[in-house]
Image (cartoon, rainbow, N blue to C red; front, side, top):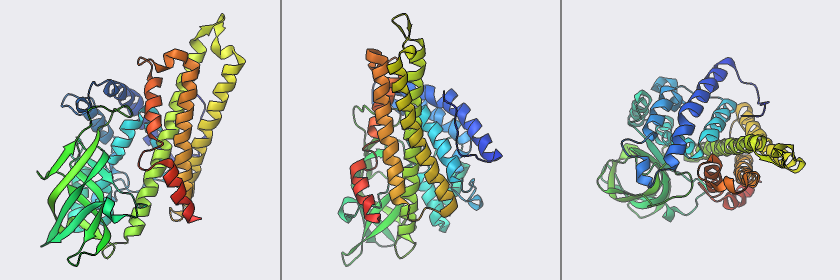
Amino acid sequence: MSFRNIDIPVDETSRAILKELEKFTTGVMRPAGIELDACSAPADVFADTSPMWGVFAAFRALDLHLVDISEDLGGFGQMDGVTGVLAAERLGYADAGLAIGLTAASAPFRLAAQLNTPAMGDLARQFCEDRQGAMIGCRAIFPWQKNLDNMLLAHEDGDGYLISGQLPGVVNAAIATHGAFDVSLASRDQSKSRGLAVIPLDDPNISREIPETVSSQRSFPRGTLRFADVRVPRECVVSEKDVPLNDINISFVIGLNRFLAAVYAGLAGAALDEALAYAKKRVQGGVPIFEHRNIRLQLFNMFKMAEAARAAVQRLAAGHDQQGMSQTWLHTVAARSLAAETASHVTSEAIQIFGGYGLAREFPLEKFFRDARLGLVEDGISEDLAIDAMLQV
């Protein structure tokens, strides 16, 4: 970033991780994201020759897919929260869509590691050993969703379950080999309860529908998954009787929203840097427009908002490191909402500084603007999350 950081200090190991990540985000991730955004159709993003696969391979070469998987399963173990959000911020600075796709790719395997039954433990181990990106996950877990009818339906059937239903707007839907999903468990007496499932997606009764066009975060594929009586083994599905489902759900969704907050804080920083660089080289009235007082004031206000978002996310992560994640849903939603709104506002202000050039495809700012807008509705509309979060007061 162009501005000097005053981040919360991290240890030497974390600094080394962040330094290697910086090479990946600047040398691999940002260029690939720009190239993928220019693809003429969503299907081109995951074609065999797509640079997306190189991003997967380079990311896994850093062993970052091992984070939050215990060492006895071959993982890296728990990364401290502050290092985690600093890493997520760098990913968002490079490309928000790729950042979200990369973390979704690990979701079912991290859940499998948490459940750690013999079958789930084996799945997590296989994922940890995968350095090429052969195993890719997707997720659709929404603990605040109260209506069980809106989830995949899992009917007990012999020694397993039959899964039916559809899930729209799933990140990695086109390429995922496994998914982590909320399910509505229907027992033989037709009563329903909540469950979680880690499902292999190689069944012929699973179909995938990819939209013809997308405008935001085009660098990673989204789509709809449809399940038509897909048989899964019993060990792939857990209920509240099997595990502390509420605790797993809450920790998952808090971690996800903290990650999204850091990604959008990073995106705001990327837009700010683009605007600052442009203001210093764009000459108007015989001087760079940076010399005009109103431009400097506008840049300062953008910086102020970006720093407030970053500070909120880092404070949240530091609190999690010290006190754990319980009872912090309200704080997490606040940080996520602030970061997403900041990214949307800062990218819009940056376009004002660029003028008409801000909407030209040859400048990355136009892409940042489109990517930021999705943050206000992604994985739950900001207003709905806020209203539900206030119930925790």
